[in-house]
Length: 301
Image: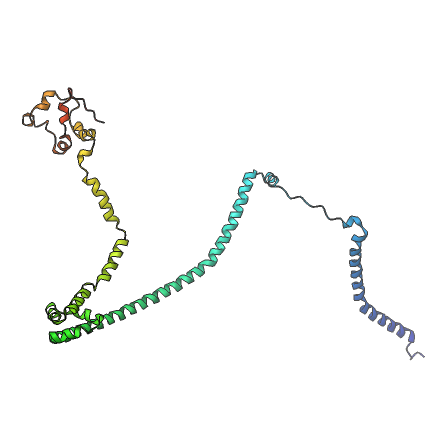
């Protein structure tokens, strides 16, 4: 009997293991149930308790005067600080906008510079091509001038009468006067008259454009000269008598001159009392002093 194990201890160990396994499997469900029960209790509390259903009392916001009083400032100073704060926020927003726009503006400026350089290069090419075309046209005109100059005047006049003005006028303008005169002498009178008038009006359109450009362009310098011309052309006699006699009064002594000295000829006067040439011009028109019974004393202002 001692060799066989006892059954009761084995059964007890097996039961304990089963209970432990069951406890481990049921433990999470117990925690979830407790949590759900707590949530249901919190949800049911406002419905059962009217005191818990009341909202919390609202807290009144402080007025600007109260805020200024708490900060130790006046309401005006507080408003200034608030406006400065708003202004600073606006400036910060503007700085952010500038920081965003500056790279875009720099990129646009680079593109514009590149386009400007490309346009300048294209302009140079066009000018070179136009110069080449002008040189070729001039060479062709010179060749036609040589051809018609070598022809007889009668034959050249017959051909000239049938040419288009775009060809005839440049060729006629480039010819020598004697050669052109010989050709026009062989042309009919109406054709010669028409050619002469068209050659005279050849540059009329360019002259009119130049005149219009000159009329539109302001000319400040001539306007200033014209405005100053009337002032310079006014005679000095239009000035008041006091202004004309003032230079002589400054150079003459302050005491009045004797009456006989006014009627005395200029040759008998001493050289020291003779007025200078600069002062003699304004002091010359003084015939009215002899009509007055006494000469008034002149004072220097």
